[in-house]
Length: 398
Image (cartoon, rainbow, N blue to C red; front, side):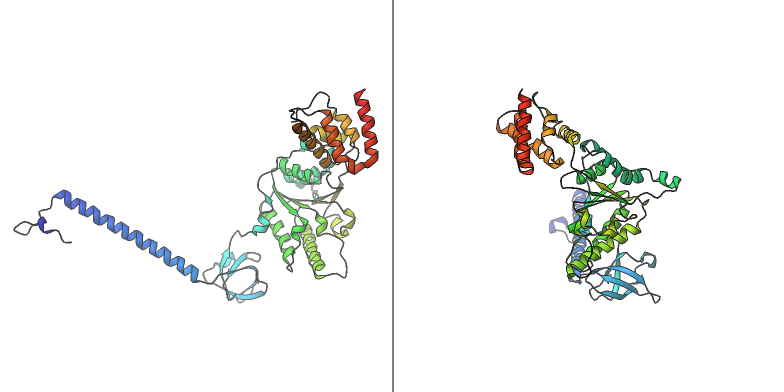
């Protein structure tokens, strides 16, 4: 290190003060730290460039390990391959069914993908528990109890079945007209039971790629086992479980493959493993008999349109937070809405609230409900409804 000329005296000795030397040492140390930071940053950029220049890896499923140490994998790109295994991978990690990464040429397994879950299937998991409770289900107490016996009891008290030596039922199928509460019951079960809720719509399992629908079904049940206790709710199951035909298009054959995978999963899982299945459909008549037999969906529950008492319960549920005028008689509204479903009654309550808002009132009157009933129900029941409504209005005004 060289110093300025004025740092030296006539004899050539350093004349800098001790404070100046300390400041110079600090400056040198700071420059060294800066140099180390720049070198570390350079190494990071070199690694990033190396990653960008490397070809991408292909995800595959390990099927089997051969006696010579090679592995049979099913590539996500399509073909089944026999590949070598990198010496860097511990042999105990290689088990059939796990996800692995193979290089671009498909000649070697270079990594084990731990905990890999299909994001499409992962999105089916309902992370936040629904806020629906059993008290929100009106007019279906008997049906709700049947579902609770199949779904809730084995999840909460599996030891009871083990002690008695009884195998619990695997699944329950709900059927009935649209809007009568099939999905509502499933949401209430999910809200009350502290279990993972996985909601699948039947049409989501239909895929144009061969074998993709069956793979999604398999992944859904694998996710349910990992997240146990869990409930799988398959809505509109008739999209994949319609009666099979001998001759059909390639699309129909793919739907049949998906159905067969679903049947295999229903047969294969242990009912005491913490997984229960609920399915719903509007068309029981078109379902394949294979899915209705005992051992798959053991209990089939009809969800009917509500009767007069049920309609009153539903109206009371939907109006419990609503400000009602003294003249509102929910019993008369329940009587004049014969044939209405739970969804219709909810629409009537909502429309009555809108009628009050349009009129600038903060209280909902009986007249608001009459207008709402007329709007929602007139198309459903026609002249019969209008005659009944006029008669009930006359009784109400007397």
